[in-house]
Length: 281
Image (cartoon, rainbow, N blue to C red; front, side):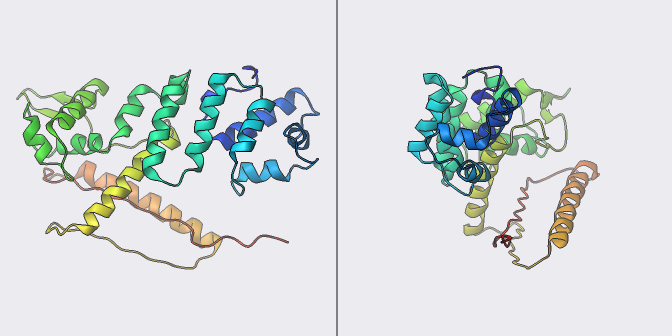
């Protein structure tokens, strides 16, 4: 596959890769339309198959994965990455996605462009962010067993040691004059620089934590609620803006409050469609 066009190793979504590949090929060769691409895949002269794949309305079977590999003249290394990438994007099982994502990182020949190793390590396990926030609550020097006991759900002392070492490496914590390890900031935001698939893997872990917290009897204040509602497109967009504003306000409260922190909480917000828009005839 020509590196001047695009590299599959730069992508964490096979649909975006295929769309960009075809677009760049057509910019170099006007005849390389989506219809021609379909013909090279052994399909009739139609672009609907390709469009459905790009939109995610049609799954990509293993048979057509191999046809794409041949049509794109991928090397064996590129082909193996592409196969795992398709499986990863089409998997609906969090544990399987985590294993496949690990494979993508190990197979990637340009990992720094896909996701930096520091980003990968930090978001790979949920307890790194918990430890980061917990160090703002407790006085910690080097008692990793004690630190681990303060985390919910429970982690090992080795897990706690790994988190602290990583936070030191990333410059997210510093040792005070009193010898305590404290965060360098009150809150963290993943930011747009972090690859969306990496953050999505982290969010899936957080949703699993939410399920465990919901099922466990606990005296600490908790708030779980579900609302299903019908809205217009403009109403939907207004709610999204309100949610973004609310998240900013929550971060501001945590950052600016004068009272010292004495606990760590996680806030997850899920706002997703449960009906499909009407398709124009």
